[in-house]
Length: 102
Length: 162
Image 1 (spheres, rainbow over the protein chains, first blue to last red):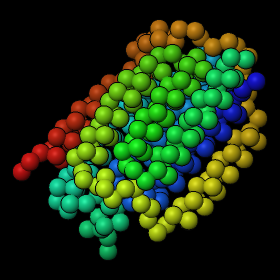
Image 2 (cartoon, one colour; image 1 turned 90 degrees about the horizontal axis):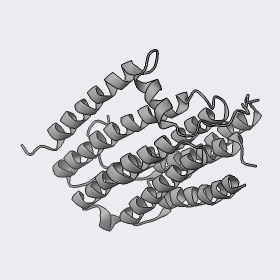
Image 3 (spheres, chains in turn brown, red; image 1 turned 135 degrees about the vertical axis):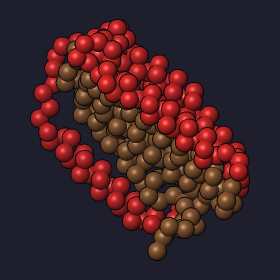
Image 4 (spheres, each protein chain N blue to C red; image 1 turned 120 degrees about the vertical axis):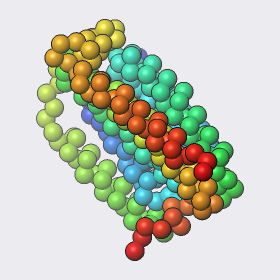
């Protein structure tokens, strides 16, 4: 029987994979995709809590909707920044974008 | 019984697709497996009887965000260089494993108060009541379009040709 812990562990696995991708990748678009993966993992945990702990209140699902709104805004601005950087510097390698590094 | 079979199938596809996102060399294939992962997460919402959220997931993630990501991949000619790792590959791996160990330990050792009530079965009216009704989340609902408007204006300003 599948319970709350299964969904939580799945969410932790997806979040850790996203964390690895966000830390270890050089392509800025892959980093953004890893962040989307982490947001999705959080959403799974939210909906699982909502389903198994307060099944009649649905607060977790409402939180998941707001996370989706923020993720949509984040991906729009993030990709716009990546395209602007690509126009100026001809690269989106995160290790070479170091203008603000001391 | 059907739910647990669906859970195991969907969960294994989700983990494999997520691994492909960070391990595949081709950026475009990574984007495609990310879309597969989004679709599978929508299926997982259905096993959690969150029907409205599954539809929103398909509309927002599979429909909109994936198109944006693929558009950005096509606008930047970084595809030929693939998706290499930086020099923090091993430390990042250890950080991710440590994070997983910590959070998994916390999740498995917390005594969750699992309710035995069956879930609500169409959830859309209840979510609408929560979002727009008395004592619900009306203030965040009003702030969300403001955030989206700011994001749209910001994106236009950022990519505008000088």
